[in-house]
Length: 363
Image (cartoon, rainbow, N blue to C red; front, side, top):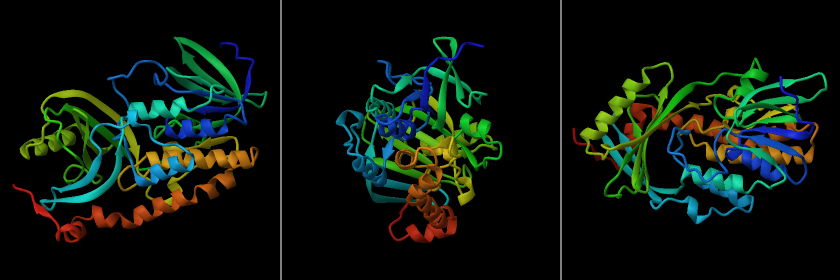
């Protein structure tokens, strides 16, 4: 076992995605922080390899959270196609609809790198590292074990923030009774889009493929085809069936560029939301915070990171009750989304809701 680093940090943050980066940025001036992430978020690389599937779409709510922190979205993280239209393709009812949209279309990798660039240099941020484990030792400190440059290392922290996503190792290794949420596999494939003319974020409903939804998102010269598929089904076969339907309807999915995959959670009840305790706090999808209707993660990641940081700043020792109070708007939003879901996910109700403006899909 390697000798631990002699430095003792106030907080160790596992993950530097939107929730972890937000928490680190807001806490850095007041606490010593160690943070790690497996991705090369500070290097010159922009990997084309497997990354987390994410549409990179910022809703109006996510934009408001950034504005409340004095952050304006820089132009370089936006892609050429800004999405003023949200299209609905309903294969169950053979209908198509267009609606006005208010989404910012971002490059996910560049957006995350921008958030990381806002983290003050006082944070000991290690990227391209692998989190291997977390233990509380006799000294009363948490020992964070990780691999960096093929070497196993250990650092010590008084408290931990788990910002490591849907498959959070912090959550499930430290809290044996943590709730398990309905789990889906998010699959995305990127295709070349020769004409570059596809100005809509497209939501696809097809109950023969998934009880959730699928999507099309333009990214400059590419088109993303994605779907959230129940993890206990033949996801490869279902995703193939989705692509066949899209090909039959003349969508440009011929030249495959890359594939991505990652678990997606779907909180269906209040008990699915779990934020840890006063020593190990969870944020973002690690805490179950993600939109159950259309898997918007940015709003809940940014919002929970901010809510936790503000709670810690108010009471560093006993912040959980304040954190949960700060989370109430996001918690209520998830509850409301679940209440409204039958409008979109019940085939019969959806047919009547949209039929007044629907365009018939040619069989």
